[in-house]
Length: 150
Image 1 (cartoon, rainbow, N blue to C red):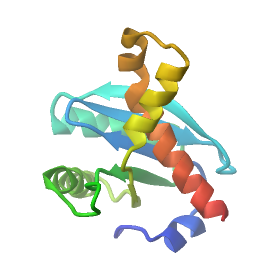
Image 2 (spheres, rainbow, N blue to C red):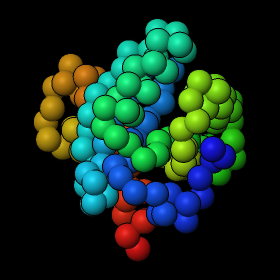
Image 3 (cartoon, rainbow, N blue to C red):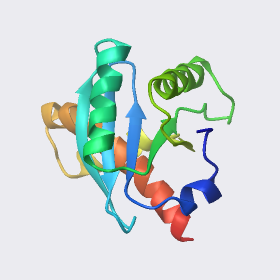
Image 4 (cartoon, rainbow, N blue to C red):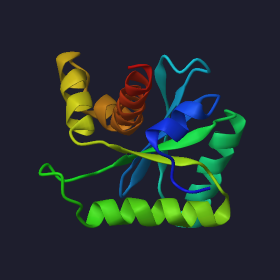
């Protein structure tokens, strides 16, 4: 399965799994079947690619996800840096294991927006650290869901 366009993604049916890929963690969120709401799901502490991919694909399967929405860490000026290539490499390696439909979404400022929200809610530093990645995945996925509706 090649990478999906927004139109391809709109044509799929079922929940979407959102992924905020970091160097140390993978934040995950899931949409409902009607694709109205993204819900933060889990944070995977990264070990090595193979066990990380196995856990991600298990969550993909158990939630009967139609596609994987991956946040792409584009630079503020819109250019692609080494982090973008790292995320694309992760996606390519994942597709070698299983032909998962993948859609990339510009995730600039997602972690900052989520962190601001947690600070405004007076969340402790420990709670912020535990939740930021899955909340960022939810923020990314909600952006896609909103775009699909408009």
